[in-house]
Amino acid sequence: MLRAVNFTRWSPRLPGTPRRGSSAAAARAAGGPVPAARTGSGEPQPPAAGLSVAETLGRLPALIAVVHGPEHHVGYLNPAWEEVFGPADPDGDPAAADALPELTEIGVLPLMEQVLRSGKPRTAKARRVPGGRSFTFTCSPLDVGGTPGVLVFGADVTDEVSAVERIRHGERLQREAAVALQRSLLPQGLEQPDDLRVAATYQPGGTDAAVGGDWYDVITLGAGRTALVIGDVMGRGVRAAAVMGQLRTAVRAYARLDLPPHEILHLLDDIAAEIDPNQIATCLYAVHDPNEGHLVHACAGHVPLLLRTPDGAVHRVESPTGPPLGTGGWMYTSGTIDMPPGTRGVLYTDGLIERRGEDIDVGVAALERAFAGASGAPAVVCDRLIRTLGVTAEHDDDVAVLVFEHPAHEGPEAELFRGAALDLLGGVEAAPRARAFASGVLTSWRFPTELHDTGVLAASELVANSLQHGTPPMRLRLRRTDRRLIIEVTDGDDRLPRRRQAAPGDENGRGISIVATIAETWGARRTPGGGKSVWCEFTLPG
Image (cartoon, rainbow, N blue to C red):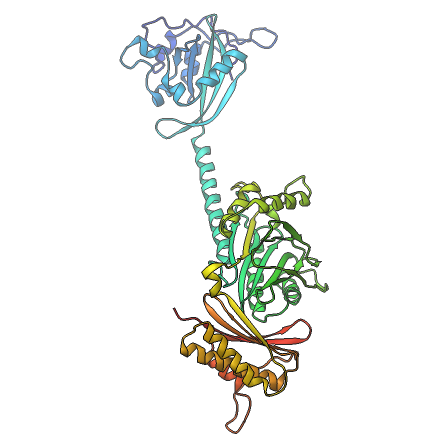
């Protein structure tokens, strides 16, 4: 690098004289022998053997320009510069050579001003020039015949820039593929339960190709009940995403067993250790039951669920928390919280609320404030929470958010969500009372004759099955939503019924088969306290 070189032997071009560096003769005409470069002590160094400054710079493959004075008058351009940008005064017009427009185009003019003010060199990183090549420009201070000047040195970095662009393009393709893999393992479309409004969002973290293991799910369980799931596999990378995909598949399979949340976590804990003993995952599993108006939940090392009650207060639900999945040997337990109509909830992963250098409780408190002020549909609330918590495309951790709402139905809509129940008291005489009750309720709901008759038949068979095989207390419950009719019978015996093929001479054993044949779907589950529930559903016409 030439710095503070005294160009006293270099005569700056007088106005009207061409500035060229494209021939050896012009280079020799530009000045005498190379002047002595000054060291920091001011002592001159021996000059190069017989070469002028112009001849020396003219032989370099780098781009060289020398300008001087406050107007940046052109003192010299080497052939390499003119090859890229053209001569300073191709038409012989003196005014055209008084400044180089390319200095502005490549963005080094402000840099030259800094060099003149500070007397220190400055470098502008790769700039693309005409012809598609890229150069890094270094501006160094010069003394040109007693006038402050700047030497602009352009080093060709085209190959380096192309290599970096290829690497970045490859990384971008890898990241796009990784994010596509992650999204393909998440639900492509959330199930929309009758009694809940739900929405979810996923924001991949960082800019590298290492996907995370965050996931969420919504699973309809039948009889109006819905499972809500959020989880996070520790670490990043394709392995974490693969473990996440297997756990999500396992959750959906186990959910069909309609077990309590803590039993689902026990099963997941076992399979997580089998999938990869070196990976652990957090999970929160909750079941909403609109019939009972509550939410049953269990947690394996996950961040707490938040609920906002109809009065607008936000509560941090402290689930009975066990260690993450995959650690083994822990007995998880379930908790229950009331969830009346008008209640909203949010499940999320720690990427939403965890920040470096801050306690995680600070992030949860910030989320509580944001959730308290967020209004609109669940999808809108998801977006607002993401924005309010400062999650951007450059966020360094994956984020999954699931918002759900148990809406309060009012006006004409309330007529579409109704329920009725009858306690089954006495012995066999409870069966005709149950049929009469079901017939009256379905008639008041103005169902078509066909649906009315099949509904009464299903209720009769479920009640008969409970009277024969169950124990008190027994109850018949009918519910309608805007999409389906649900018939459910509960009793105090925890033995679940099985569908079986009755022999021609059997007087019993056909009830569940009849229900399974006429209903859209049916199921059975054990209830807290040692009983069971047997239910069936019919899709409403239209």
